Amino acid sequence: MLAKSIGLAATVLTLSSLGFSVLGSTPLLILRHDVPMDGRFIRQVFHYCYRVVAVFAITATIAHTASERIGLAVGLGAIALLALAMHQWLLRRLDTLRLTMYEGSGDPLAIRRFRQLHAGAIGLNFAQLVAMISGLTQVTL
Image: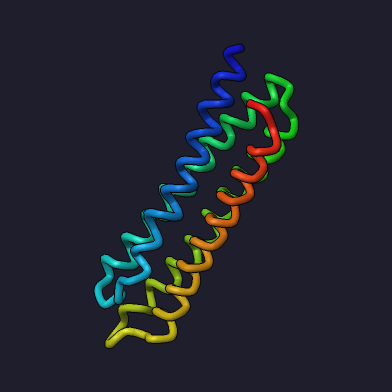
């Protein structure tokens, strides 16, 4: 019974974290990136969002595995793996682009690529959120 309760709580927290990631980072697309703080702030938002999603999804995976809900465990495990992979992949690229965005008068191509990565990450998080919601409608908690 405890594993089911922890699994439910961790699943809700994973869902909430993904929702916050999408809703919290979308308004940041309007930033002009004319100061280094803009890029640093966006990087930190993704850093913490991916970490939080990974921790809650791993917790949910372990709890659902313990309560023999393999379908939920596999789905949440996939979300955890994607969050960990995106954390490494996205942040490395954002850091590389941030170095060139603010040199001299700024590199417009680097700023454009930074925005594309930002928008792509939001799109991926939204796709995960939709997949998780649709998956949860198919199971009974």
